[in-house]
Image (cartoon, rainbow, N blue to C red):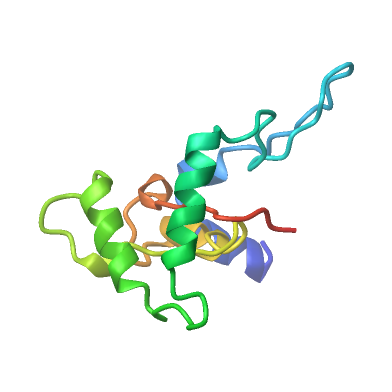
Length: 126
């Protein structure tokens, strides 16, 4: 057994190693949408609300680096277990950033299950 195979066997849970990769197929005769795309435009009322919010935002300043206000809002809005530290909320800026945490989850790096990772990707990555 190679060193890599032995390390994987020692650190990744059996049920994770037993899974297989999934594949996607390209349907014919359909419009392809990426994960963050929507075939319908935003309603005019929502576009106005977004425009008003952006008009008041301090876009001339860098956002708070640690995202504490966003984390607190997420902790209030999402099913975060009572008593869990706000540090348990992690913010990623692209869909590829959660990958290291998801990989670390089976290795017991402080996350009980990969499904415990909460993510929201604000923009398409790639």
